[in-house]
Image (cartoon, rainbow, N blue to C red):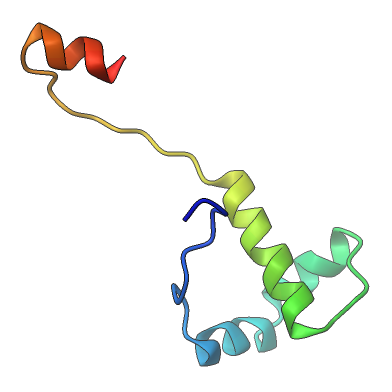
Length: 71
């Protein structure tokens, strides 16, 4: 998890299908990617997801001690 990649998030056949459908390859080429090995494309894809993923955590901080801990 420290690397930002969730292991086994996609099965190998799902990643292969996404590459074959062409959208990932098209965006990869547009970004200047030339090495079309599956590992290179997967790495580019996961880095792009990691760079564009934003998270918001919403909760009710009950009690002052918990509220300060969350800050």
